[in-house]
Image (cartoon, rainbow, N blue to C red; front, side):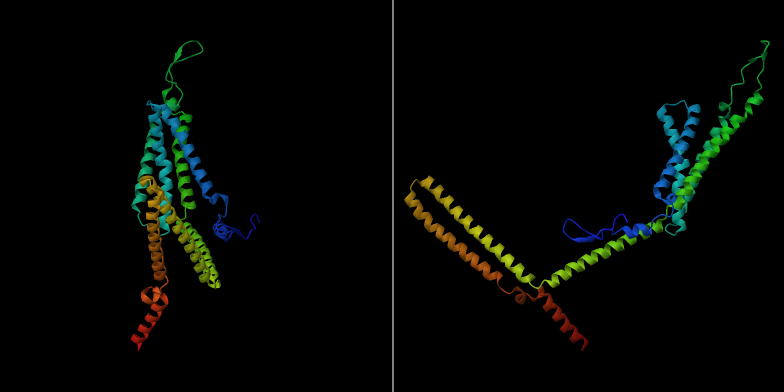
Length: 322
């Protein structure tokens, strides 16, 4: 096997299966290379290229417009002979599988193709004389006497007739091929089935990962104590930072007052008392906050206690049933 690794680590250090979607890919793998979407897309592009050169040879003989206008005319015929049959096959497959019931689109597509086919036939028949050799001019005989050209033979030239039939039938062949390929390769029910299988496999993997996390949390009996100690350490560090910052502010204020009053003795006596009051108020505030957060909030507000609310619901249910 190309990839025989059973598991791999993601960026978060979690173990995941390396071939999670390999089963779905193998299950819906095309039987032959011609059933593959890329091959079908390449064949339809080839059919469009063939029609492009066929229509280009026609327009180069009859169109005297600019190259841009001639290209627009060719693309218009390509739309009717190649794009429309592709969507016609797609819509017909949807109707056959019960996904869509709108047959009006099929009628519109058939009308568009019929109009393109009619225009191509009319252009080919009216320009058939352009494909014939120029025999209308007088030809000279071996003795130098002019001989009248046979116009009836020029009109029935087999080369012109065969090229006209070729120009009429070849776009039809490519259009039928595009329709046939799009109808066979497009399978909306199979596509939805493949997506659902991939979603089920992905959802199963997520459920497995969630269960693993839950089992890990349930197996860790000291998680509450470790989280509490970790939060206590963070609280003590934050408290020390607050006290240090308060001391820095007091020292900064003392220096600014000394610069303003220019009397260090009076300023130090004044600010020393103020700093002690500030630290006393700060300690009182911290003590009050510690007392508030150390209270049992679940007993004072039982609606936030999941265990208590569950027991209350159970008692109420027993009362109703009794």
